[in-house]
Length: 360
Image (cartoon, rainbow, N blue to C red; front, top):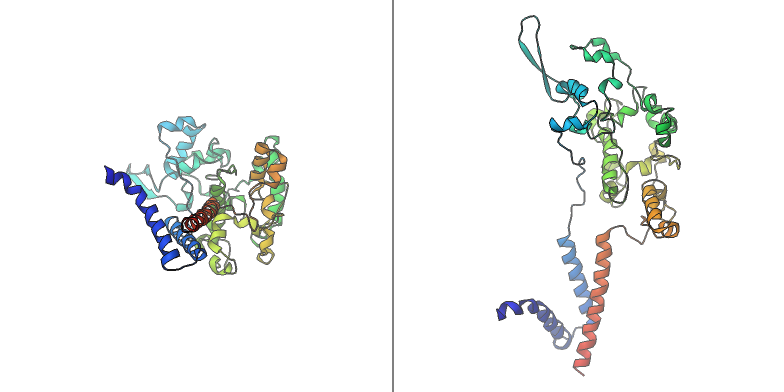
């Protein structure tokens, strides 16, 4: 028991003996000892907390909707009549001519993931709220493929219930953006916001990372997928890494900032900017984001600042909120590392003073 109990004191004793030897036997200056200890600690901390430079971007966790749980959703009974075919990769029907059961593959673009739908903003709607009532009849008429697709404004425009989201202003900004100007009328809200799966993130301090990932995936759905990109343009899909090779700490920017921070014209009145600018107007100046007067204040951190003001008051909320400015860092690990380095420095100085007093 005595040997086990003394074990925790072995390492500090070794450190003490090493410092004593380096200082008085090897005649190494104390300042160099402090520097070496700090470098060793930083190296050890970095190795233990190492993470890949380029973090993988994945979809938020999906929920599994059981048949029993469907009763919690309004209109689920009617919607399941559609999802029993469109909610899976294959469907079946009975051939009335010969009575045989026919099994066929569902077109990929016509598949709606059931879990994603019941987690989306439109989970309480009926399919026929947006699609023709004629879809109730199977087999569907071929003419229904020519049906005009409803846009967000068709339902949300002029509705006082949704006035705070300013759908009309969003539509105006989108129509003036490069997406609308350079593409045909087929480029609608659906291109970025699939009504079967889209959901709004709360954008609070707790889910900021999730918001960044979710919003960037919307852009990458086309700009990171050549098959989707070719539906809109005959030009080759540009390599995003090469196009952004001028950006320092590229992977960190991709995982901590949304594409729209640099590629939209900010609108203070909108929750999310929708005026996509041409690539030659993209933000490239570091100080645009890394300053106290940051464009991120009016976009990514808009909700965070509001949340801080509600918690600590307007003065602290505005002047002491976490920002992506040069100097202060939003990475808690680096903040912790700074405190530890400072603490080790103080300890090293105390050890040095103790040794000098002891050997006088």
